Amino acid sequence: MAKPPPGRRLDDMTADEVKQFWHGFCERKNIDPAIRARGDKKIDEDPDFWADQTMMKLLEAVST
Image (cartoon, rainbow, N blue to C red; front, side):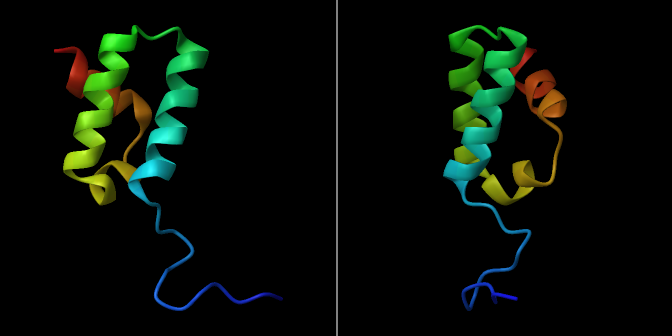
């Protein structure tokens, strides 16, 4: 069994990884590009928080 690189837990996600997940969600749900961009900004502000949230919660946060 391969060990993860030191200093990173298995459940850690970078901002780019969270954005990849967010972008896939947006594509599947046909989300407007402007909303997607607002989501990217939110992810950049606190990627650790958004890594632990559902994409629906992020969508709700940037749609209001």
